[in-house]
Amino acid sequence: MEKFRNAPGGVKLHHNYLGGLLEHTHNMLRVAVAILPLYEQVQPDLVLAGIFLHDIGKTEELSYDMAFSYTDSGQLIGHVVQSLLMVNEKVAALKAKGTQIDQTVLDSLGHIILSHHGQYDFGSPKLPAMAEAFMVYYIDDLDAKVSQVTAAIENELGDSNWTAWKNALQTRLYRKRIE
Image (cartoon, rainbow, N blue to C red):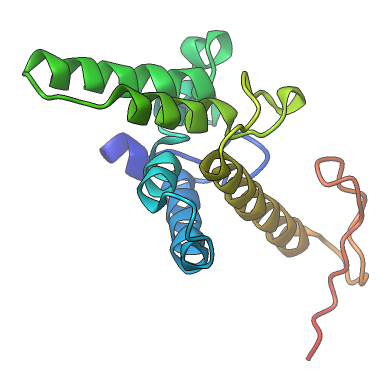
């Protein structure tokens, strides 16, 4: 749990500071808790478990003792697959102790983890195919984008109302606060 508490949320794009992974996950959980009552057909337990576990592999993917970088495992496997491997390892240990775990639940949770980037181009080995997976994908993307926008605005030098072009967001950002 200490690795999860201290890990950055990423190297460059969002929540790229110590404790960023925990903050990102906490933000996502708060958004989910706020909107889940609007969607009665969505299974809240799957969404919340998917959010909590979707980036757990970043604790193995990222090195952050000195500068932020990728571990060999992070380069070779990546956090999406590493997250599923970590969950499967825990499930195997529970099953070895006689715990019964529904395979449909495991497959659904695995699907949420594997599809949480939402698109093949963004590193998802699977596209979302369940309402819960779409919810995790969009909540993840929302929190990541808001983090990127606020960090870009806060870190911009000068007094212009606009930031320089931000490649990750494909836009310039309006900096002036509306009072």
